[in-house]
Image (cartoon, rainbow, N blue to C red; front, top):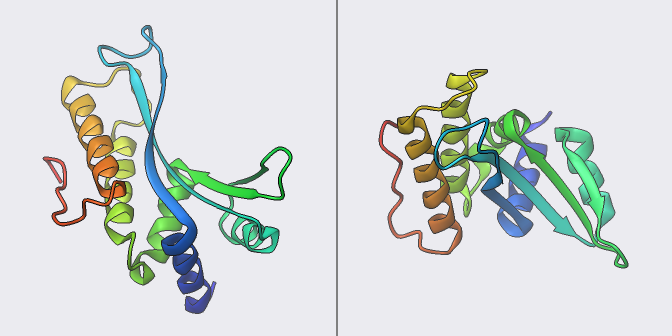
Length: 150
């Protein structure tokens, strides 16, 4: 993929996209206390299907349509999201900090890989990443705080 395409995708994310860490469902049997699972997620929603299709074709992920409206949504998560964010990172302006934080979050998750149990320290880190991403997305960007250990 050419640099101009990665820059174009970065512009779409800066203008219309969202980079976040989602808090998933609770499974009291699979995880210890605070059993929520967190995942990295990037999406773009717009009426222009052509741009959504272009993102899907070039970066993977999935497409969905809002019921009753001509409004389309592209999203990508976990490792595919990390690869996408790494490819557009040099071109991001407004959401650079969210992308860096998301990449660090996913790398930390990948380190534990297939273990069923998370340690309390890992849970605390994930909660820290989640809270920091919420702060960044709320518009309070005066100071970027990277969770301990990174």
